[in-house]
Image (tube, rainbow, N blue to C red; front, top):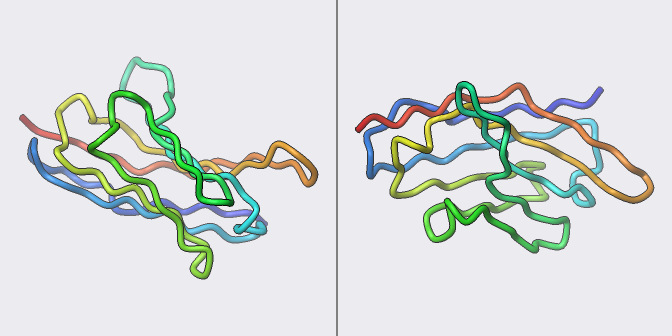
Length: 118
Protein backbone atom coordinates (compact mmCIF):
# COMPACT_ATOMS: atom_id res chain seq x y z
CA UNK A 1 0.00 0.00 0.00
CA UNK A 2 1.42 3.35 -1.07
CA UNK A 3 1.38 6.21 1.40
CA UNK A 4 2.62 9.77 1.10
CA UNK A 5 2.33 11.59 4.40
CA UNK A 6 2.95 15.32 4.44
CA UNK A 7 3.75 17.28 7.58
CA UNK A 8 5.07 20.67 8.61
CA UNK A 9 2.24 22.92 7.52
CA UNK A 10 1.38 25.73 9.90
CA UNK A 11 0.37 29.34 10.36
CA UNK A 12 3.33 31.68 9.90
CA UNK A 13 3.83 35.40 9.51
CA UNK A 14 4.92 36.92 6.23
CA UNK A 15 8.69 36.77 5.90
CA UNK A 16 8.89 33.61 7.94
CA UNK A 17 10.02 30.11 7.04
CA UNK A 18 8.60 26.61 7.09
CA UNK A 19 9.89 23.20 6.12
CA UNK A 20 7.46 20.67 4.75
CA UNK A 21 8.20 16.95 4.78
CA UNK A 22 6.67 14.11 2.80
CA UNK A 23 7.42 10.58 3.94
CA UNK A 24 6.81 7.90 1.33
CA UNK A 25 6.20 4.19 1.75
CA UNK A 26 5.19 1.41 -0.61
CA UNK A 27 7.19 2.73 -3.57
CA UNK A 28 10.78 2.46 -4.74
CA UNK A 29 11.54 5.97 -3.58
CA UNK A 30 14.93 6.35 -5.24
CA UNK A 31 13.44 6.02 -8.75
CA UNK A 32 10.46 8.28 -8.10
CA UNK A 33 10.20 11.84 -9.30
CA UNK A 34 8.91 13.79 -6.33
CA UNK A 35 7.01 17.03 -6.43
CA UNK A 36 5.30 19.61 -4.31
CA UNK A 37 2.10 21.20 -5.58
CA UNK A 38 -0.27 23.65 -3.96
CA UNK A 39 -3.90 24.61 -4.23
CA UNK A 40 -5.34 27.83 -2.89
CA UNK A 41 -9.10 28.24 -2.32
CA UNK A 42 -10.88 28.67 -5.64
CA UNK A 43 -7.69 28.03 -7.59
CA UNK A 44 -6.35 25.13 -9.60
CA UNK A 45 -3.61 22.98 -8.19
CA UNK A 46 -0.25 24.26 -9.37
CA UNK A 47 3.29 22.97 -9.45
CA UNK A 48 5.64 24.40 -6.85
CA UNK A 49 8.80 22.34 -7.24
CA UNK A 50 9.97 18.94 -8.44
CA UNK A 51 13.04 16.81 -7.97
CA UNK A 52 13.93 13.79 -10.05
CA UNK A 53 15.39 10.56 -8.76
CA UNK A 54 18.74 11.86 -9.97
CA UNK A 55 18.36 15.10 -8.06
CA UNK A 56 17.48 17.52 -10.85
CA UNK A 57 15.21 20.25 -9.55
CA UNK A 58 12.63 22.51 -11.13
CA UNK A 59 10.72 25.44 -9.59
CA UNK A 60 7.76 27.60 -10.38
CA UNK A 61 8.83 31.15 -11.16
CA UNK A 62 6.84 32.42 -8.19
CA UNK A 63 8.99 30.51 -5.70
CA UNK A 64 12.44 30.59 -7.32
CA UNK A 65 15.03 31.88 -4.90
CA UNK A 66 12.74 31.40 -1.91
CA UNK A 67 11.89 27.68 -1.85
CA UNK A 68 14.25 24.70 -1.96
CA UNK A 69 13.23 21.13 -2.67
CA UNK A 70 15.44 18.28 -1.52
CA UNK A 71 15.23 14.56 -0.91
CA UNK A 72 16.76 11.99 1.39
CA UNK A 73 16.57 8.60 -0.28
CA UNK A 74 17.74 6.85 2.87
CA UNK A 75 14.68 8.19 4.70
CA UNK A 76 12.26 7.99 1.75
CA UNK A 77 11.45 11.63 2.37
CA UNK A 78 11.23 14.76 0.28
CA UNK A 79 11.39 18.23 1.79
CA UNK A 80 10.33 21.72 0.83
CA UNK A 81 12.11 24.53 2.62
CA UNK A 82 10.13 27.72 2.24
CA UNK A 83 11.74 31.04 3.09
CA UNK A 84 10.51 34.62 2.79
CA UNK A 85 6.93 33.43 2.82
CA UNK A 86 4.24 35.68 1.40
CA UNK A 87 0.48 35.72 1.99
CA UNK A 88 0.04 34.51 -1.59
CA UNK A 89 1.86 31.30 -0.63
CA UNK A 90 -1.17 30.35 1.46
CA UNK A 91 -2.52 27.04 0.18
CA UNK A 92 -2.81 23.35 0.82
CA UNK A 93 0.50 21.81 -0.19
CA UNK A 94 0.47 18.33 -1.71
CA UNK A 95 3.26 15.85 -2.27
CA UNK A 96 3.33 13.75 -5.44
CA UNK A 97 5.37 10.70 -6.35
CA UNK A 98 5.49 9.72 -10.00
CA UNK A 99 7.43 7.95 -12.67
CA UNK A 100 6.79 8.29 -16.40
CA UNK A 101 8.39 5.06 -17.55
CA UNK A 102 8.10 1.46 -16.51
CA UNK A 103 7.23 0.89 -13.74
CA UNK A 104 4.87 3.85 -14.15
CA UNK A 105 3.05 5.27 -11.14
CA UNK A 106 1.51 8.43 -9.77
CA UNK A 107 0.44 9.00 -6.20
CA UNK A 108 -0.67 11.99 -4.13
CA UNK A 109 -0.52 12.74 -0.46
CA UNK A 110 -3.41 14.13 1.55
CA UNK A 111 -2.02 17.66 1.79
CA UNK A 112 -0.88 19.98 4.55
CA UNK A 113 -2.16 23.51 5.14
CA UNK A 114 0.20 26.47 4.96
CA UNK A 115 -1.21 29.83 5.99
CA UNK A 116 0.85 33.00 5.75
CA UNK A 117 -0.50 36.03 7.59
CA UNK A 118 0.33 39.57 6.56
